[in-house]
Length: 343
Ligand SMILES: Nc1nc2c(c(=O)[nH]1)N[C@H]1C(S)=C(S)[C@@H](COP(=O)(O)OP(=O)(O)OC[C@H]3O[C@@H](n4cnc5c(N)ncnc54)[C@H](O)[C@@H]3O)O[C@H]1N2
Ligand code: MOO
Image (cartoon, rainbow, N blue to C red; front, side, top):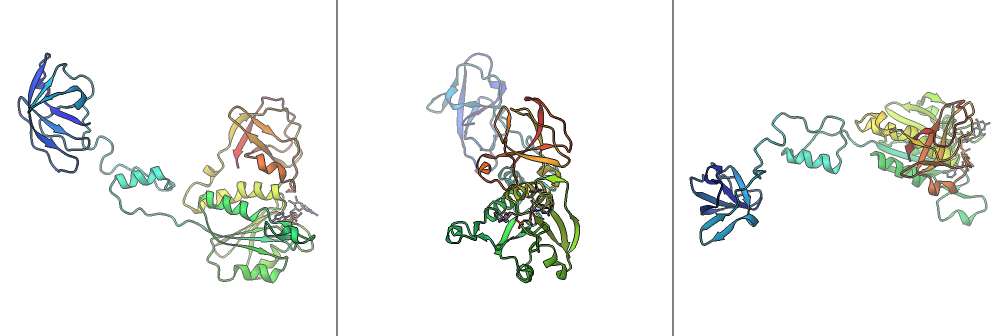
């Protein structure tokens, strides 16, 4: 506080007249003492002189040629921050696994740390496959092409989750090309989009077998995204994402984001922060696969879209959440609480 440092013993209930003995600025080092009948001008952040009990705001002081007059005895806060009153030596401000957000970095620097040990950001190699996919902006050039709508989107999901994109490749359905995309790559995670299902040119798994791919699972009973698969080549994690766009984005949110969170030193579960919100519409009974439905979530409620197709993309423009429905869930009325995840 900008004001005068004073001693409570000098504030006798009526007006006090004190002698100004000088000024202390922030950064000026240890302050002197003040004695009976004395006051010292201090600026916010300056060390408080020994003997002072409080700082009186300058607005409440009458200053006249070396004399300070306080008409009303100051009450309430002393405006003095005691050493160690915020945190003390040995106190843990940032537990291991805490993301270094702007606020966390301020806490580390406030504790006078120039360096903190961190987990390296996971490096991601993103491969989109398909003879038909073309870079956005060029698909109109050929009748055989469709825009690759997934690379940019999944790359952004990776970055927002804390990953570093090493490279984005767009490949035709050719096993040798898919294999060579991985060669020499220092990626911690390879994401391969498309070619995950049962088509004659679905090569994403078979192309990587000669590299020593070990598949942990292939196919999960979810809708959309059933063909999702996961494996590893040595220490490199490989996530196979189905090509159908809504399926791809749902799988990236449910599998890739937690994977990156875990590899970043955090708890993968924190990436799946489901919350309950009321649905604005009644829900039909669900089929035998656990379902994830595109929705718009606003403050009060979640609006689940009527049309849910793994290939549909127009609705993605207004999708900001997915709603989870258990396998064989019964019909539910509007207003029922449903689990919602931001996407
Ligand atoms: N016999 C079966 N066929 C299919 C099954 C099944 O269980 N049995 N599953 C279906 C499901 S579910 C999905 S999802 C798709 C996923 O198939 P793939 O991962 O093999 O994906 P593709 O065949 O390569 O592509 C599917 C669809 O998506 C379009 N696509 C692909 N990549 C992109 C991209 N980067 N940007 C935009 N669109 C993309 C592609 O053109 C296809 O239309 O398999 C079903 N089949
Ligand atoms: O699982 Mo698929 O993704 O329903 O189209």
